[in-house]
Image (tube, rainbow, N blue to C red):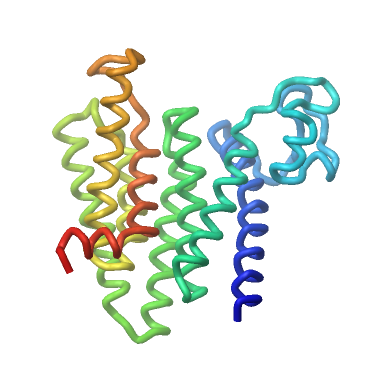
Amino acid sequence: MILDMYLAETAAGLLGLAIGSFLNVVVHRVPRGGSLTQPGSSCPSCGTRLKPLDNVPVLSWLWLRGRCRTCGARISARYPLIEALTAVLFVVAVLRYDDLEVAAFVAAASAVFVALSFIDLEHRRVPNVIVLPAAAVALVWVGAASLLRGDPTLIAWSVAGGVGFFTLMLLIALISPGGMGMGDVKLALFIGVVAGRFGPGAVAVAVMAGFFVGGLVAVAVLITGRGGRKTAVPFAPMLCVGAMIALYLGRPLVSAWLGV
């Protein structure tokens, strides 16, 4: 039993590293309109194709000390960070949920949150080509799970969560056009669908945690002098952090909130 648990965690970590490596390609190429398959992995500076040993998640970056073997150009620490973060999230998903299907659902959603967060941080965009298909896939996944488990509340709350959070963010965007982008509104649809699977409490935690984290970041920007009240701050990463708080900590937080 213990051995099986360790095997599951190890498999999740290795899969997370591999998915994280792919997410680096997504973060780098999607905003630029590039292909995810062609050309193969290469140095962003000189374009040299990476050898297999230079493309091992995290370890290759550490071994090469964050530089290209060919031209010596610095390779951003974002690459091992995304790989390690994705691996950690996958392992925690397996630890958090005994049901493998649910753990896979949470891990897959987290991978999307990681990609969208880093894209928004760098490009101030939430690409439709990622967030809309992700929302559709999540809805189909929850629908299939609802059917197979004979539990219609799963898909019902998922739809309600997506529509509800989307509507809330759309109203905010219409009332304050400069304070909220439509990319954030579409991201709210995806978050609502994902969190909705776990009930209205999880959606509430995702919404409140996202805005709370956003408020903390805004205060930090003001205190550190990195901007003023009108400084535009990418909001998608805050929403994604809020969503992951709901997925990984939602039930304990809801229980503590309700005092049960």
